[in-house]
Image (cartoon, rainbow, N blue to C red; front, side, top):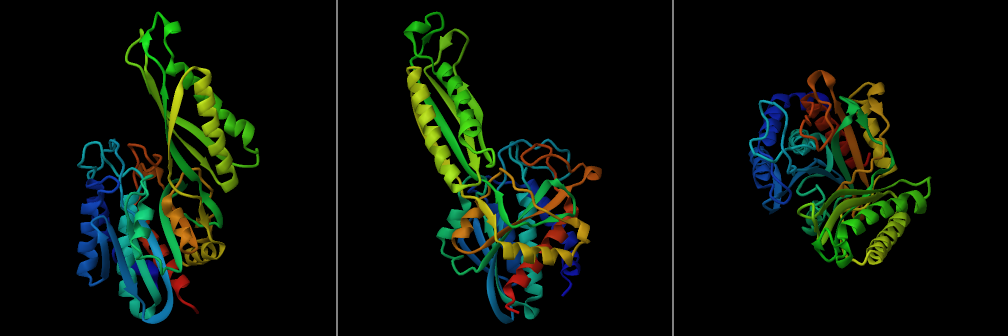
Length: 388
């Protein structure tokens, strides 16, 4: 079976599908049009579709021979940010764009399903192509798992197009690939008043500034230099004008690490520092913590299969190691069901202007990698499903 030729046959069609998705981004939990488009294309091909919600679709392809059940996760949500590109197919929705490549992932999922359906008489096993909502820190994987429709899966693959890597390179390595991310909101309560009389007030801004600095000691003084961890304060909002001491201050940020024991320690130190520093400044503090997901860990056997599949598609120099990242992905949740492998395809192409980082307004996917991604996903899944 020539998976690359099969993917190339769909290239024009997948390009049009990708551009349509890019023009119509939808936020987490509201990916209804996206799923309607997925169902339109796959339904027309006669592919079995499981549709437990308006924003969740699972395509099912049955091979002709017995084998394993393989899941492939493709995320569908966009980001609430302004697109800055001048692409002819730029977002038609103001303040919303596909700035992370999920439109590419959905496209790859659709045409991977079509390829597997076309080749089903030559395949073993069952393939569940999962179009997952709300990956951007919004617990979409847990929503899919809650449907009960993926509990029979023996192995999961997930794909991400990746702007730091040269276009056309394929990356699959064993071990931890994406961190365990927590997102938090800290509200510091003080007592407002006149800026000329700070002694009669309790300043939450001063307390907040001290908390920001103190939190950095978690990584620098409580995490081993041999471990990786991040504490970031991404926003700090308080006050209305120069001569008013604010009543409250709100800080938001993220904690990330790769180790469960480190994670537990970080959470304990985090809470202790915030409450004690706030108290030392005469304030009180509330913490809202969103535990997004666990660590994405690639199963060694699945990573080996992905690399063997890659060797059939690209020259050896295009198969490169995968670097762990402090970014998070709720693909990690599927590990509770079966072994997982989260792979990345490079799409950094200066000649086409595809160099911007993910979550940047100038982010652009190199469309040339779409057929390669389809072929890689389909071949990896087929090799995993076949008991021989």
